[in-house]
Image (tube, rainbow, N blue to C red; front, side, top):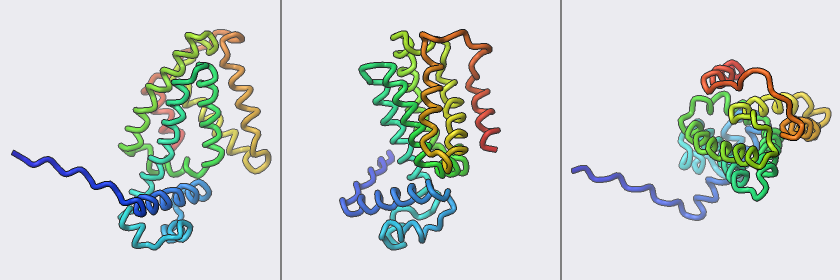
Length: 216
């Protein structure tokens, strides 16, 4: 009979703080400059030594995964709040605004996700946890009668792709323009002003192929 593997010991408080500082520094620098930031710059920004970095993250890929997990955890928390919001429309609209805001603040993370996250099992597992929360948010807003009934969860990524393009195009000339674009977008999603959408939403397979072409 095999002996079950021992659970990893929890980090001491000082080690946990050091790990959090490394992840926060890496996320900030990746957001600014993309994933090619040297690890030496990350440790200097965190005020820690290379030995501390390698104790927590023996490879840069592990540090990148930790940054992506941190970003996805923030999205998961926002999705959970949206699904539980007292006002379903406010929960739905607030989640989209939160995602746009994160895109604006973390534009370099798109390159990290494209380089590492699309094929990462951890990233896929985190996406899988978020999806049911978003479906709940959409269904609640539709039952409330505030979100157009023909909107689907598969339409959400396309909204974020378009928002990302707006954020990228206007970042240096009008950094908050995305908020105006978001208001226009949300008005088009309200049930009270909806006209039937042409065509069908993307299937999951079509969405995957479109995402691969976008990041290719």
